[in-house]
Length: 104
Image (tube, rainbow, N blue to C red; front, side):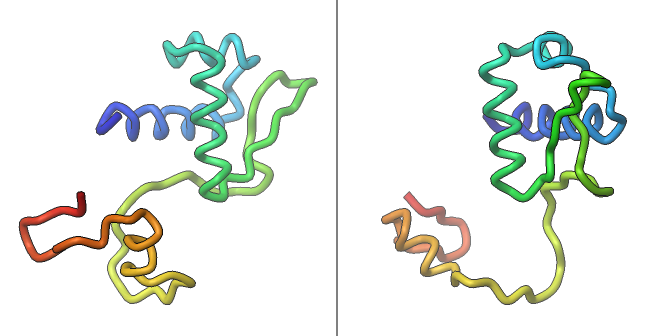
């Protein structure tokens, strides 16, 4: 996964924002992945709130309203429904997260 995963999300976003994806088969070929993998990427983006739609007439994916898909760090305090501890407990790995250590 890693950087390649993020890079592919960014490329998919670029094509969708330009309404220049083509059909799912064409889009998957452009992205050098199978249609199944493309659908998985689109599902991930939708899970994160991307309003992705498909227009049959233009044969292209598009965003239902203006915006771009971004994965980045945002400085500031953002109240969430879940605390970090809640998220770690949900995954069952709330171990030592002191500097230099990662959850198992």
